[in-house]
Image (tube, rainbow, N blue to C red; front, side, top):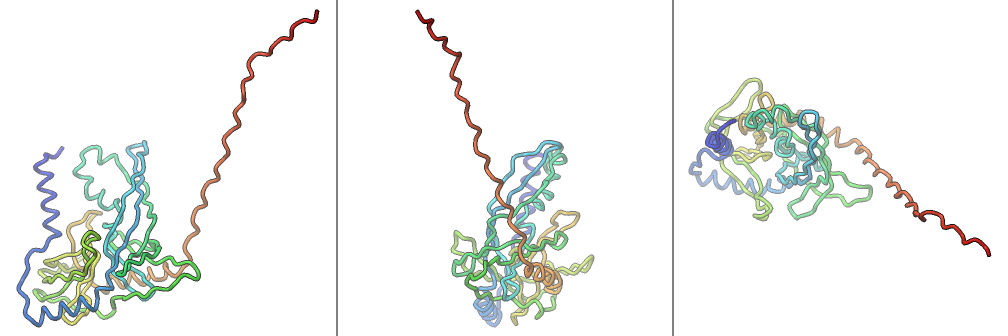
Length: 294
């Protein structure tokens, strides 16, 4: 079993991987580009809320299901409202795999048998809540796609998608901006964070290492062209840090997700009929003998 000191050191290392490495001074032209960008793209970042039910087993024994409320940022990809975020951010299975090694022998025996996404909704910038569903997941690229699930005759909503096809090339030590939103407690105000590319990983696929990360949110260059999305880099099912996945790779999977989103949603399971309780038999007790006639 790992010591508390070693576990604390691991938590600090993980937090440092997701924190800005440095903030550099911006020129006036860069600052203006950031201000213009957040005004233009803020509505492309919306909230994704859901309840995730996790069913786990310990050896042959099923554990009680656990429910988690999830509230994360997502990036709108098309006019129909298809939205992408980090799969790790919504699926506890990915987080569990990352923690398994710190759990000792018990972790080796525990398995997540099923993950169920319920009460999924997209929250627009004006507070409107739209029912939605998870339409596609990619565990290798850490992508999860959520699409609105509108009933016939429901009011249509306007979405402000980012343009994945208008992509920027990554240049080492050039200035970029991540556009995100603060938490619900901070009124979900738009946030723009300057970042630098400090490294480029070429294999097995190209990803960028940057100084500031906002999971599930896009990164743009000074001209407003998208570089990619902040996602976990997964190796053997475990995160090795947050990177920027190029827009072209996201677009390739997003096209598949758009096809899935256009399909009718699967029928919802009907609630099992509730059987009436069995009638209670009244015990009248032993028979009473009548008195003999005189």
